[in-house]
Length: 166
Image (cartoon, rainbow, N blue to C red; front, top):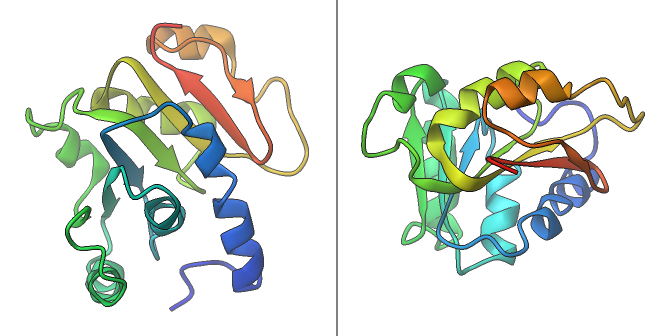
């Protein structure tokens, strides 16, 4: 369906596995914004059966296919698939601050991603975002993150981890 880009699936899965160590210490609910084909959410769900994941994307066709995949993998008891826009989803008061972590792979520019993720995270919540191979120290400006209530970005292998209030 063209949802994973042009890299071989093995490389996509390998990269998605880099989200798992970034979620060490996280319990409860995790939201994957702009999930597309379910990456990294499905990889996280397989690696961390203790977490409850919500996979969110606005494209109905992709989400219909993802619901079938989640059922086929036997994950429907702990993986929720939602079709919707991130901004509208954030207006649901039951979702505000309800997630321990938000993950994103290719969602958008760094500060836009942080801004879209922030309403879902409470104090101590974590945002984990896929990073390009070339490290750019200016990619996550501290003043921009601070204005959203985030601490500085922590560069990990393949991803960045940013915590609310730290």
